[in-house]
Length: 124
Image (cartoon, rainbow, N blue to C red; front, top):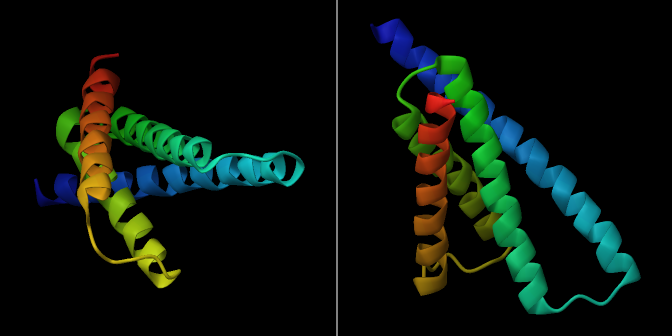
């Protein structure tokens, strides 16, 4: 039984890694677009949110499909790991460490998307 739990953690970490690959690819595409056009801060914010949610969805679906059980929990695990790494990188790069209303709302939305992605992936 303990071995199955360890496998779940490893697969969740693989899902997070795959989510980061999607994030990097989408951010590179966005950077190219930004070099040729003027993009508002609102549009950038929406793009970053959508990128985060798509990455979490992909990572969760990958992990749940590989484990084939506990979709809800795996989805939350992938989401929390992904957001923790994003938060640490954000603080290291000079952003504020304060978790305000905006970050809390994004975190809640990401948890909801991760959990729902896990449920949907488990039932496909």
